[in-house]
Image (cartoon, rainbow over the protein chains, first blue to last red):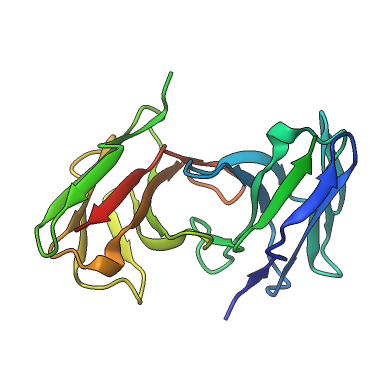
Length: 112
Length: 113
C-alpha cells in the first residue's frame, strides 16, 4: 500500500513567521512531488513541484526533497493570514505515471 | 482564461435520482481525472482517462460511471446517488508525463437530499 503521510494540524504560526509543512512517502522510487494549496470549499491549486534532491525556491515558498529519508517539505516564509489553508502533498505513483497519491493535508492557520 | 471548467458548481439531487456532472478543458491534455473529496480528506481518485482509454480504480463503486466523448469533455454519471455520495467532485487534467502539473477544475459540490 503506497502512502503519503502528513500531520493533519492545525499548524498555527504568527504572521511573519516561517511555516514548515512536512510529508513522508512510502514508495522509495517515487520521482515527482507536488504541493497543492486548498482553501476551504475550493479546489486544490499547485504551489510547487520538485523532482530532485535539495531545495527549490519560488518567492516565499521553498520545497525541500530528501529521497534517502523519503520526505518532502514546504517552507513558507513571512507567512500571511491569506496563507491559511490546507496544504496537500502529492507523490507520483510509479506504477502509473498518470496518477498522484495525495496525503490528507495539513491545515495551516496564520494568526494576524 | 479558465482552463478546466466544471458544471454545475453546485448540484442538489434527491436520493436515488441520477445526476451528471460535466468537465471541459481548453488545455488539450491527454489525461482527465475524476476525484471525490469529502471534508478533511484527501481527494480520492475514482477513474481517469488517457485519451479514450478508461481506467477505473478498484474500489470505485459501480454506481459511478464516466464518459469522455472527445479530448475536451468528460462526464461523471452517478446512477443512484446515496447520502454517502454527497461530496465535492473534482475534475483534473494533465498533459501526459509524471513531471507534468495536474490542474484541477473548481469542483462541483453535490448535495443529496
